[in-house]
Amino acid sequence: MADATPRLAVLASGRGSNLQAILDAIDDGRLHAQVAGVFGDKPAAFALARARAAGIPARALRPRDFAGRDEFDAALFAEVASVRPDVVVCAGYMRLLGAAALAPWAGRIINIHPSLLPDFKGLDTHARALAAGVPEHGASVHFVTADLDGGPVIAQARVPVLDGDDADALAARVLDTEHPLLVASLQLLCAGRIVLRDEVVELDGKLLAAPLQLASNRLPA
Image (tube, rainbow, N blue to C red):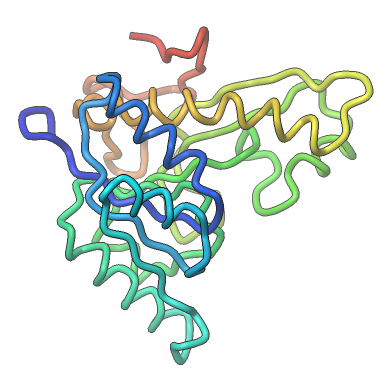
């Protein structure tokens, strides 16, 4: 991926703020990549409108049009494969992906999740963090497996939980870290520096003993 321009396919279900962060980073030269297509499960998702406005092919399939999850996933990933991506990025994609659909993409599909994994997998992470009384919260970028938010973690960004925080305030603070975290992780992945080998993450050919930590909007060089 380091020689040719890496091709990204983005999966999104919502407004697409992380997609926009990727597009902005490509436009201003921080990320050597191109978004080849954007796909999702909600035709009205604003992420698709963002993609089309940028001249990027975008399509949503409706789960209700398929007999089950496996059939939907197969159709979705046929669309993904049609744009020949090097990396698939789940950026606010809200459906669990099945093992059969993921198998051909092992080590080439990542997700950004709003918690410090393995804590608070799944939904409502900010409210759950507040209820648990944790002193810090954050976001994680991880390789996707069929285990919900359970794939090997590449990198994290941490934020303090402040007195008086509610779920919305905490969510906004975490979102501010998600964008640079995702871009920094993609920089390493697209450069071939991060790989998944035998279910463990390697950086520059060496085992990553713990997730990289975002500092000053950059992961360690």
